[in-house]
Image (cartoon, rainbow, N blue to C red; front, side):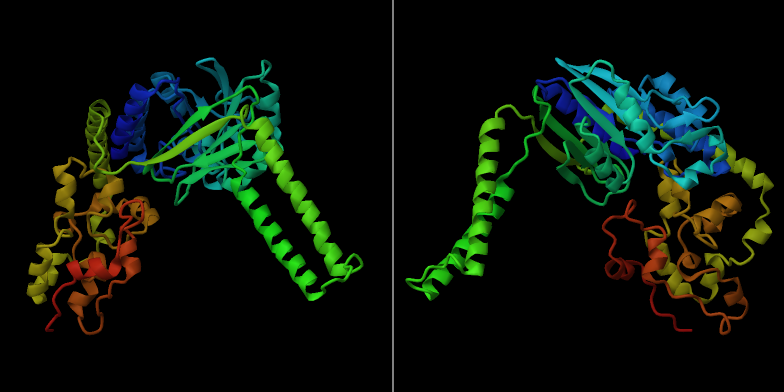
Length: 479
């Protein structure tokens, strides 16, 4: 959520500097990171979503596409967010099973300066999301059935049509090739890099990298032609390179056969035919550039990295800070409820705790106490996020870090103080048996996969195992 305040600052700067009307859109996947939320997290996650929507309203968003994971808390909650924060959710293919009618508006029309812009939404299909019991009364229809119907419903033809889609890129390409009416497709979903806008059919497709680390901005000059100007320079260069190659081959044949009539030479005639074809191709490209370039639509695109160094927007930062406090209090209450129901004995029976390790490994324990791992829980506590289960799982010591098991068995609620912080067993595995029979039950050696359980790309996109393991590796044991 911290990136939202930096995103807000960039948006506000652009709004202040813009001499043209602006649309602020998102194709979805904003609110939740799981297709089905564990019951223990539901109340906290919903409160967090409230904060995100409040921040989006402050940033003056015009519309949001509905992605599968946005549905994790159910349709009623999403409708509540839309009504409370007055930002429309858009989806043409998310429908109620009993009526077949769209849950949200399939499209909206926005007046942007002199232009009428239709904004359509398409929800991707995720089988995990559809297994959510909170969504038993809705269906997600195939895009083939709904896009044509939605486009037909645009009685007064808009000047421009934008699609907010969280389908995979290959499906978006198919949509672009099948529906020439769509001018711009904004994609959401996983992408490890920004996608510079590119043309498929008559649609321009683009996407920023996932995990909220970039903000994309497109400055569009839209003309009555309703067509994008395509830069034909690469195509023209390729054709001219081919022509140069053919002229070279023709010249070589002529040099090898001085004074001869090569009109009957099969290879010579084939090359001449190919040369004529390329010359026509070059002439067509040049003519197209000359005839249409002045009336075609153009754009400037930039992807803005939301680095930590970017200043935060004070209003959104305040919204998010208050929201995090409320989420933490909700999670605190929920954790206490779970703690009362959870049997600590069985869940933690395989664990020894760092104080038991200290008995035989005093030097290693003293070294560990000076590492950031030892202070991991303190970091959350100081930031009032010690009950945020998404964060907490990687700031404590657990018998397993399999998220499904952790939340299913309420492991976080069972932890006692000595397991707060990332201690010995987080890297070497549960050690109760090792304390009882050291030689027969040797501790595990941590591998890169051990670290990647928590040092995932969205939390640590600069993780270097060889370098960082040296920072936390304990002194060699003498026993």
